Length: 273
Image (cartoon, rainbow, N blue to C red; front, side):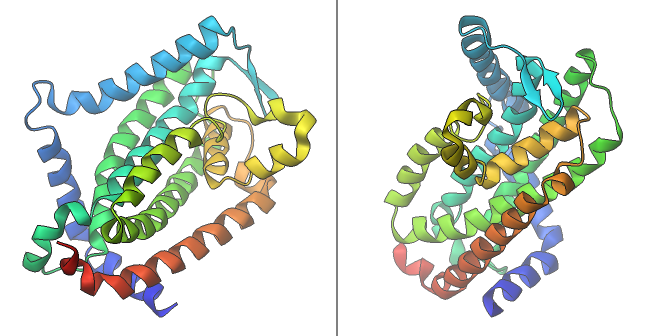
């Protein structure tokens, strides 16, 4: 618990630095591209169009039920896909955030726990922009801005807490054992198909136990929360309070574990050069 408090204090005390480094990260990544920052939008847009074409046009996916509403497949997919993109990029980049900067460690005068945080923050800006585009698109489908949009602030915060907790663990383990990053990359590609992004988990109603287990996935909780907000269905985190309690319990355990191993091993990171 002491390690968790230490990491939280480090994030608060260096929040301004995190913002500056995240903006620098975003700019430096796209500096050599002709289209620059536009690729941060083009890439996800191409992906979502491919999935829409495959799962809606070729497979003739019908409307999907969200709460008591039937939602056309494209906006249903869009509402979740950009959150998935944020999760994937944050987790992959966060896992290698420390070992890819080992040569910088001796020159740094800020805590190492800041590193995965500013990497996630650089992806967070893109997510906000893509979320804004999603909100504009769903207006054309008749799902107008409503009071339930307020819960987006909650789910954005919850997403950040989950992604940072995961990054603390994976960035530490990846520094010690580089194969962890490769394993994570393969695992996350599978996660896309079991998190309710591309198809509704309710299709598994005949396998109720399996469906209930898959719904415990914390990413599924966030995805459904986004959809309930964007389509004006209900206060998801209240009506599904059991999942809310499970989610925060899971995130808390992840964060405590991540903080403990990060604080324990970070003094030895330089030895892995």
